[in-house]
Image (cartoon, rainbow, N blue to C red):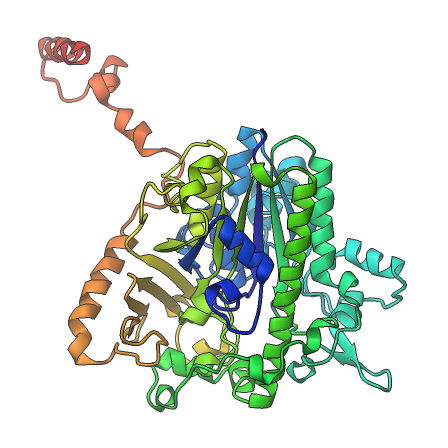
Length: 542
């Protein structure tokens, strides 16, 4: 039976906003059903806490400091291999429906003579995916980004004459007098979007994914279905817009002590406009109601999608990966958006359904093993029986965990963030080159190295809500040094030698291969040379 992979990613979905992860009032039965069919990884972390670099790590299987796309719209270098580059030689069609946040290395392509409209140029420009339908999900009435013409045409066919239906229909509401209220403004989040459910972004891109699967037929495929919600604008169609009143919301996680003497970088992010907006309880409540509604809509679409796979006879041959590119603070820790490393931001949902019989022993289980976003690529490659190219891919296949062969694949996880683009850097007076944060989490201690400042440190055993930063406490200086040593060890890894594997290097120089090829170095006489060759041949025969 032909193998397939459905790689589903939500945008800005927190790890704890699913009922299978413990949310008491947001019921997600269809996503929960995936967890019952596979393994839910409860301690999964992203390699960066913002869309672009996180996704580039998801797609390359490499850390941010390895692939170099450190923030949104920083191009992924030409030559960085992606999931599609690894799968195409195996005969697997690798396609995209939805968002990648990929920025093409236009200058690099120009230097190498790669035309963007050529077959290779298109793949390099699209992060290695065949763009069945790309929609990065932010289309204001400006020249920002690239509008999705297919969606615009669809909305016009549905009777919407608006010039930009993404903005004025799918992501705007309407008051009783017919005035359009933009979803960009947080206080409009409790209004129903003008678009009916079936015309909004999530159901639309689900249907497009189904169309791809029908068209793909019996050939093996890997489809990246990448939703652009529950990312802002926080607005959702009826009936989802008023499903979740205040009493269904989880309490905010923050303390006054966090604001008294915060780490300088943490304090600077508290001053960001979006963070201040989330300190207003009326605004926060409106946003969370919409955020929960957007997730419920995604869950309903998961139900439609799984029924479709059943009807197509593909359920028993399709691996499903369900995840998110990062979380959302939603006012926790006095912050909005994502970007820093508290669990609401850096920890993500990750569910993997392996349909093979080898995975039967772990079905319906929850793994507490530390795993990373970069582990998705090698897992998919392993599923397709592809090579594990460890000199390129830095993640580790999760199949040994899924098959019950191992309990862990790593001792710590890493996440990196370049805040040089943010006003917080200017507020702190930090140079662009020094605006770097790196998190190392070993399952208990979360250590954040901050260039030019003291570290941050949280003990998640004693302080699971991460309210008490111990980085400046001299009683924990030894723990900081231990974790700094681990981070330094990780930073010394070889990550840029991607053109030659360790095995190839190991094979070089064996049996005096260079000398046999005529490159004779270090021999005083020809007799010494011939004696050495003879000895090498004896060793080889043995």
